[in-house]
Structures are given as structure tokens and as C-alpha cells.
Amino acid sequence: MSGNLAIAAVSAVMKYVILTPAPGNGISAVVPDLVVTAVPPHRVSEDAPCLNIFFYRAMVNSGWAQNGLPSRNSQGERVSNPYLALDLYYLITAHATGDYQGEILLGYAMQAFHENPVLPRAIIRTALTSSTLVTTETPAGVLAAFAAADLAEQIEQIKITPYFPAPEELSNLWSPLNTGYVPTANYKVTVVLIESRRPARSALPVRAYNLYALPVNTPHIEDVIAAAGAGLPILAGARVALRGSALRGDDTRVVVGGVEISNGALDISNERIEFNLPTGLPAGITGVQVRHLLNIGTPPTEHRGLESNVVAFVLQPQITQTGPNYDIQIIPAGGGQPRRLQISLDPPVSAEARAMVLLNELNAPSTRAAFLFSFQASSRSPEDPPAAQLTFAIPNVPAGDYLVRVRINGAESPLNYVSPDGYLSPAVTLP
Image (cartoon, rainbow, N blue to C red):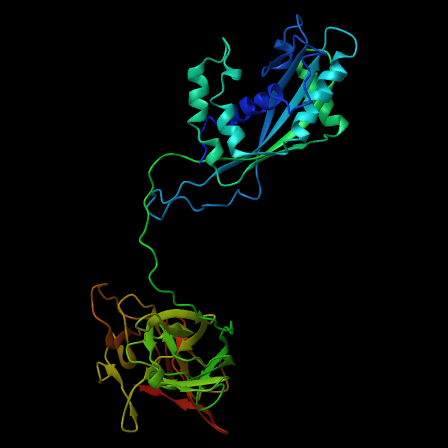
């Protein structure tokens, strides 16, 4: 593949094509003292008629731009040497010292390139080893370096095509050259593939391919409800239902609060999945997601496949019962102060959770509004394990009957409603 001297090598080969015309296309009889150069136009000598090859622009070739990428792996190691693929743009200028010489020279050069629209590899090799190009400015050692660029060995052959810039582009090109306009032809040379010679890591070849065609049918959860019915509280260990679309997969898993529930513990249809909540979930806002695993590979192993959206639901704490009685204790039992409530809850409450007890007076007299109170739980050390019992100081609460709710991280324990009397329990009687 071509090295970094490939651009200069292209200019040298173009010069050789002009200096070695096809039989019958010679110019020596008409312009015997012709000089061919490859310098900026303002440096061309006016002492003799001259054809000048001026390289003025290189642009990345869009067809080869992405070949060989990415060039580095995730560790930053070089895994390939992508081509620097370039299109080269040239001005062929004819500098005359007499009448008609400009027209003669430009026609001669254009005919030479017309007969060589694709540079054969043999011409490239011959040009870069020919004494025809050896001059004082370009000694044999420089040509040897050009030959070492391996321009003839690149994958795609080099093509020379006329290029017709817009008048504005041509004006912008000539304006900074500090020389008068002379007969000119523009050419595009494509494509030069320059490749680094630096070593790159090469992975072992792939021995076997595992190809799979799978439909993209992403599961979607619309809502989470208690399996017994929408609107009922979701409590620890309860059976819940996910409603949505495309929920069934070949290997379906449900992840609740970071706990994965396997396919065998799920009752699955395409629009509904039912399962029992795993133990250990904290009260409060909890997320749930459906995942479809793929058993692929040799041998087949589990891979993550399609995943649904994550939907939040409220796992409500519950005041536990022993028989018909709720596990709420008044401390001290005789009604002394300071008074506290000790309440047993399911699920257990972590030390970091925000816990509050809410008291609503029952059977308040019609002459005043019912009493409402809220109290924070007694402080605990962050290192304490989850507690199934919380203690709340309830100072200055008047005697009477109160409904009891516990709020954990914004989720409240449910109350029991009895029609037509309303909410009746859990309740406590403060002496």
C-alpha cells in the first residue's frame, strides 16, 4: 500500500506521462526546447516554453473514507491501519515564449492524459525508476524514495480525469498565485491510498459464525396493579399484575427493585404477567421491568435481549396483625407521659427510610374539628438493620380513639373501610 510519499510520486508519474508521449504524438519538432516542471506557477521560468504540473488541493475520498474503521479497540490499541484515501487536484499550465506555443503545449498535455486515463502499474514502476525524471532538483535518490512508496501496488488503480471548476473557484485559485493567467487545464487524480506502516494487533480468525434473525418486538408495560383488582393496595408479598403489550418472550424475566424473577415463577400472556412480589422489597416507590433473554451461542447461553420500559409502583407498608388485633402498643400502657406508640410493620423498614405516624381522631364531637397529628419515628443509627417495629413519640395527644397510618418514604399503610361507617381500622384508643 502507498506510503506518505505517494502524492509526490503521483506528480512525478504525471510528469513522466508528458515527457514520454505515444508514438506520433511527439512535440519536439514543434517546440524543441520544452521544459516540464512541477512547481507553483509563479516559480516557472520564462526563459523557455514550459508545461507545469501544480498540485493545489487534496480531499478525502468519500468512497474509501470509512474503510478499516475503527482503527483502535476499547483499550486504545491499534487494530488496523485505515487508509488515508485522497483525491488530488492539479493545474496543468502552459507557459509560452512565442506565438501559439501555449495552445500547442496545453493540447499536447491534455492529449497525453486523455490517452492514459488509468495509470497502468507498469508505467508507474517505469516512471519512478526512469532516468528521464532525474534532474538537479530531483536526483536519483529522491526518485528511489518515491518508488519505495509502492504507489503501483495499491489496491485501486489511479485514474486521471478532467476537472471543470466553477469560474468563481478558478478565480479564487488564481488570485493568490501572484502571476498572470496562462492557458490552463484542471485534472482530478483519484484515488491515492496512503497507509501507515506501523504494526497493528490482529485478532485470530473467526472459526464459526452464529447468525440470528429476530423480530424487534419490544415489551411495553402500561401499568402495575394488584392482581386482585385495580385500585387495591400493593402490599409486601402480594400478587401483582403487569399490563401491557408484547410481554411474552422465549425466556421472560421480571426485575422488581433489582430482584430478578425467573420465567417459571411467572404467569405470562402477551398482555399480562402475574407474579408474587419477592421478599425483602422496601416500602415506597419501586421499579419493575420486563426482560426477554436470548439463548444464543455455542453452546447456547443467556444474553440480554429486549427490555421494556421501567414502571414505578407504590409498595405500601402494612401494620401487622396478631389474630384480629393490630400490633400497635401504647407505651407506657397505663397512660403516663412521655407517651409512645410501638408499631409492627411489614415489610421491615431500613434505618435510612423516612418514617412517620399519622393519627386521625375518630368520633370527634360536632362542636369542633377532628384532631390530626403526625410524628416522626425515633432516630436510628444508619448501620442498624431493617426493623420490623418502629417507635413513635406522641406527646400532648389528647385521649380518644385514633385511626393509625404509617408513612414510609411517601407510601402509606392502608386503612380498612366499612360501608356505611367509613374508615374504622387500624385504630388505637389513647387513655
